[in-house]
Image 1 (cartoon, helix red, strand yellow):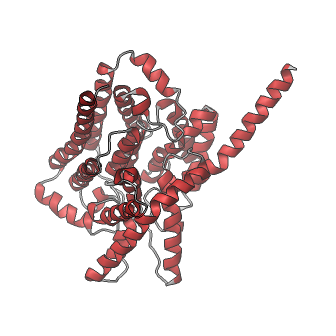
Image 2: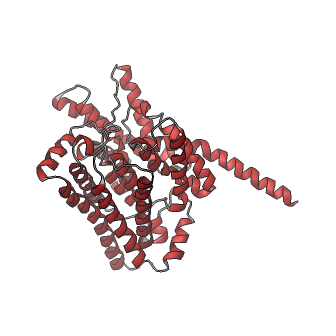
Image 3: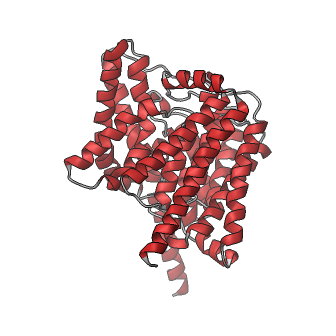
Amino acid sequence: MNKAKIKNKEKIEFLLLYSFGFYLIICAFFLNSPGEIFDGMKVILTSSGKLITDYMEIANPGAALFNSGLMTILSILLARFVKSSVSGPLIAAIFIVSGFSFFGKNIFNTIPITIGVFLYARFIKMPLKSFLLACLFGSCLGPLVSEIAFSLGFGGFKAILIAYIVGIFVGFLIPPLSQSFLRFHQGFCLYNVGFTAGIIGMFIAATLKTFDINIETVNYIYDGSDLYLKIILFISFFIMAVAGFIYTENLGESYNNLMKNTGQLVADFLEIYGGRVTLFNMGIMGIISLFFIIIFGGKLSGPVIGGILTIVGFSAFGKHPKNTIPILLGARFASNVNIYDKNSASSIMIMLFATNLAPIAGKYGFVAGLIAGFIHVGVVSNLAFLHGGLNLYNNGFAGGFVAGALVPIFDSLVLSFRRWKNNARL
């Protein structure tokens, strides 16, 4: 492909990403008035943002949509600024920012982490674009910045200054640690930075406790009408799926090849299979996620929308129906038999985010996926206290431990089965 075609292709890809961000902003004004959105944004920017702070609940749905659209566009502008090209990992990073901007991320608490990551890039004399993903994914620790600035009682400019210094320091740590921790779960936890951030958040929360500073957990979840939200999401996913369907040649063969991929990091569907079938997969996965929620009687809230958009983004970077549905079913079964309300926003959210373990189902099969999804629910339900809700990717934190424990066991079982099979032939 010549340079002109590559440049044109990249323009179209960025245009599609921009269109999603602007779509969210436009839809915001159908849900709330400009005045309500402005007032809601003030609430969002000055909230702690820690788990679980649903911006649709503490502000309003329009403000949450506006915040998500704004953060999406700013993420794309940042990618353009560092001269990054569109890839599966970048799409995943942008959509995870979109999703978590419904509960936890905002421009105030992500700026210092961005600065910290880029300072690290300068420190080791590497191009900024090499750490763009660490920057976007690493914003999951944004609540740490907001918590220090608005909830710990330092007050005024001093609190913001301390919060930004801590945020920059944390951002500086994320790139080297995330690369190191990838080896722990061998790429079977798609939310690798979530595992890293959980470790960092755990150390910070523990340190604060030694100074008698406790991070209080919160649980603000939207419980209003979600009909218009379902329509807004369905339209966007339907357009993705139809566009991919129309423009993909030999869709059946192409999609079948994509679903043969285990999803283990690093699985860049955009590079391996092309943008059109990847777009189709993103749309299909969005529709599947939405229908799972409707079928199981769940409601859309900020965290649930965040889970859906994260699945859509990672459908360019490791997720597809074959490796995701077993995880969803395993997680749902766990919710049916455990002590928690199976249709609560928390249970639905965990079910969606459990799909960060999709590579386990992709490599070891359907039953392994069921087991991973089931175990994940128990683990994630008992980890948030370690970091006090400061790490938005709590499911990534839990997923790292689940993958780290299960993968060696599954490897051992596979090896034993192969030996038994070989001996049976002799």
